[in-house]
Amino acid sequence: MAAQMQWVVSPVEFFAKLGSSEVKEGRLGLLRRTQRKKPILRAFSIYTDSKTAAQVSTASGSGADGFPLLATLVANPDGEIAISSEEKVYDVVLKQAALVREQLSSNVATDVNPELAVPGSMDLMKEAYDRCREVCAEYAKTFYLGTLLMTPERRKAIWAIYVWCRRTDELVDGPNASHITTSALDRWESRLEDLFAGRPYDMFDAALSDTVRKFPVDIQPFKDMIKGMRMDLKKSRYNNFDELYLYCYYVAGTVGLISVPVMGIAPESQATTESVYNAALALGIANQLTNILRDVGEDARRGRIYLPQDELAQAGLSEEDVFNGKVTDKWRKFMKDQITRARMYFHEAEKGVGELSQASKWPVYASLYLYREILDEIEANGYDNFTKRAYVSKTKKLVTLPMAYGRSLISPSL
Image 1 (tube, rainbow, N blue to C red):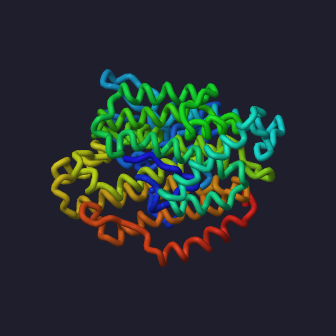
Image 2 (cartoon, rainbow, N blue to C red):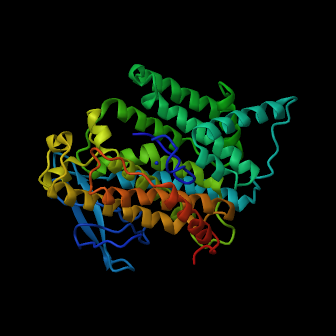
Image 3 (cartoon, rainbow, N blue to C red):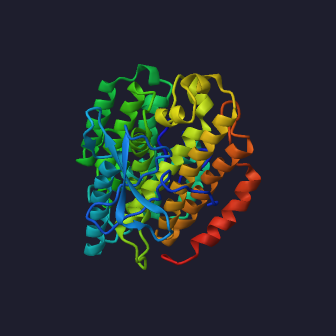
């Protein structure tokens, strides 16, 4: 499964990426935070098995919307409670948010930082960013057009990030993927560390090296994306949603954490930086879950199943059912539950988009709305994601873009 740009991603052309829904108490928890130092763990498990998870209510009992606040604590084979993947990821969220807060408090204007004062360096850096722009324009046309709405410094930074993510993804999904080893990914990570230290290897690295110098972007999400590539080399099954969530964070949620400081938070926003990062993370998870649901048949033909094994079993389905590709009543019911979960992540993500800088909101809203419509198309196809590929028509895109623009004009926190 491919990594993805989820804040300004092209819903069709990037490498791979609220409708109402009934939610039953005890089966689906809404993404919410409490006033603790650590958030209540966000449980989106469709099924609960006492062997794999324990659900814990908060003191308040429910959130503002009347949904139960639940925490999923994953138990290891010895019965000991371990920290869930969502809790692990939240530690990264806190670190990224702290970097942005530090920048905002220092009143650094990211759009006016000068280039390095080295003779000829400005021309070389312009060429480096131009190369990144060319890659974006060729391989992600809608994505590229969306970046043109941003300020010059921000759009160049997003181009550089896009190219690095694309190159990283192609290590395991590209034409030479069969020859890629963990050693090759180790070398790629070492090269990442060099560019963060100001020692770029090539022009593309130089552009990203300049970007991370100008913006409060941390190396951890980049390293975590490489972890996702490592998972794809050795893992083709996911026992439960906790495992799948971590994978979705590695290959997609990371891009949200990388992109927020470049996108910028609106000066008038009253939201906390943590909440904006949580929304970016949720959008990445939503996009990747959508990829997984859209590509069930394609992945199965490659011998991969990116669906929680325990949830398949509890729905009365097996791996053979997935490989056989027959749409049954059990499959439809299973897919309805999976789509419900993905939509809830989209719903949580939407709350944070309005807190971004004005120049970033339109392309992000467009991405969110268009990608979410893929779930509608899966439903329209009768939940046949074995032989039919869900996609959003050009007509629907033309209708969605003005709607996204209108939504982007609304002030933050309204």
